[in-house]
Image (cartoon, rainbow, N blue to C red; front, side, top):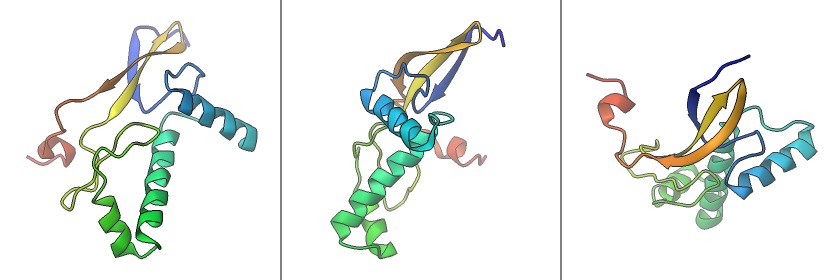
Length: 130
C-alpha cells in the first residue's frame, strides 16, 4: 500500500493521467460501456491489434487468413493507439515499442513519460534461446 520509488513500463495509463488523449478517450468509452475503466494498460495492446486487423480487412477486402497475413506484413511503423507497429514475413511480434513509464510513490501511480526502445530486442532475448 505504501510502495514508493517503483517504476513500470506499460502501454498506457488507466489512471486518467496518460499524455496520449486518445487513450484517455478510450478509458472513458470503456467506462461508459462496461462500468469500469480498463483493468491495466495492456488493454490498449489488444485495442491496437483490433485497429490493425480492421485495416487489414479493409485493405484486403475480406477475412481470408492468407490475405490478412499479407496485409499485416506490409505494416511498417503503422500508427496505432499505442504507437507504431511493424510486421514482416519473418517476424509477427514486436521488437520495438513505445511504453509509458509509470512511477509509484506512496502507493499512488503517476505517468512519467513515454519511452521507445531504439535497439530492437535481440532474438536470443525475445525467444529466450542461448
